[in-house]
Image (cartoon, rainbow, N blue to C red; front, side):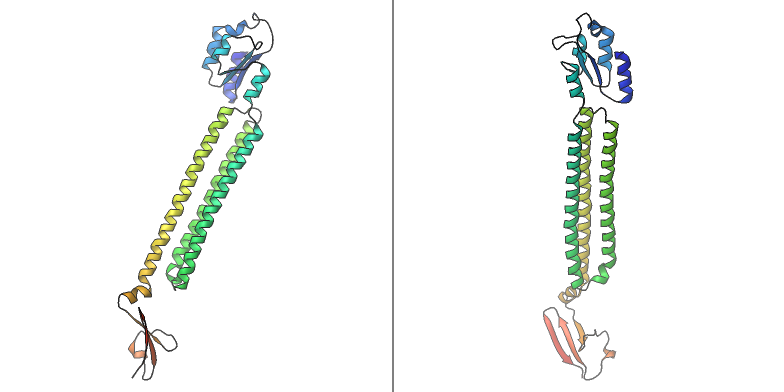
Length: 258
């Protein structure tokens, strides 16, 4: 029966346990058999030994992964606290959500501030298309992170259903470690992506400064406007008596066409 139970446990992926309450040492002699000991040692599933009384020992106790004094104690050791696992998963999900929202909000504020500064300097036309691409990339990143988080939560819900009747603590610990690893990878990927976007915005801002009128002023150029603020691009558009304003890097002058 023990061998059949071990094979069944291997197929279903549950923890196996050998237990028998009470009885004399002669009744427990089967657990001293070599074939039983070898089967326990070769089993890929963790086995808890709980045979006889608390003071009784058999060879099976020494080859099993864990010995419990009684069958009841073995059951308590084999089954993890489901409420505690769910609480830990919920806590991890809330922490990931909070970190994601804080980082997206922070970079949103930076980009909005930069956008307002650009618009005030008259660079809307130059940056309209790049900013649209950045907004699109940001939306895609947000959707991807949320989808990744939802996928992890769905996977853990599936694990919880599969282990509703049997929760091996070692398997759960490995899953939690994997979740922590995925969370670290996710946070790094998010940070790298946002850093790249910020660097791209900085490059665009530098280009805007280089192409803007302030840069031209610093190189010795000037801009001439009519009295009503229209840009003068050709002398043929002027006539005698027109009042003009010429802007330089350090100020402006007024003049009249002869």
